[in-house]
Image (cartoon, rainbow, N blue to C red; front, top):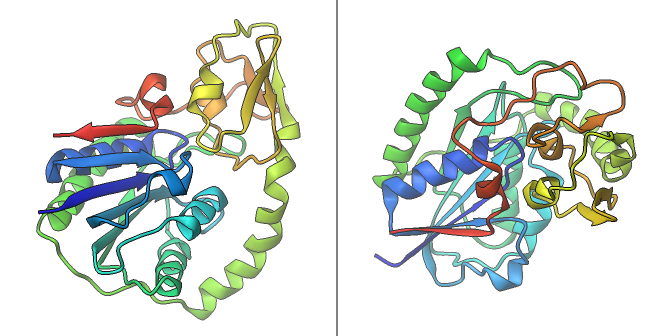
Length: 262
């Protein structure tokens, strides 16, 4: 067996947890954050390549899309994708498949990991984490088993309904980068720097110890849900909502750029 590389984008930790569980099942494997420069983490020599990402606004996160477009891959590899979502993947897996086709490659396996939806700027986490996480773990075990067996399934195809949703989605996605102007930082901030480390898009730096947002936000809400002081909020929408992140994922894990499983 050759090299296995799994690339992930994660805001709540759901996709990172999935990447770790799959890597543990098919080790040796390396999991790599899409926060990295694609040129520095090429998959040109890998014979198994995975991509794990959440569904944002009915597709892949835009940051993940740009990373994948620039990543060099082995076109003949076994390539799998897992979309993590609280509802339906809508265009996410179809869009990913089309991106690979433009590279001259093909998706071998695609799976949907039904998890906890946690866009805290709009709603409370759902389904209820205590009930959904055991179901998600069982489903992930099945997906990991499929990948370990190098299962091949049919790629997801586009539909008229999905294309209508794309028309709604596009203007919203274009407006995302500067929506970080809605973030607020209270006096409870202790300048710990966790928000800088967990942001999967590298959108946060610090000035005088306090977070500064750089206007290429994906609205993942990682900075809010991992803040130990609940000092970061979005407008007046998140102060009283539950701040969910995957319970098995720590801020330190989120800050890692690569992890090896041997």
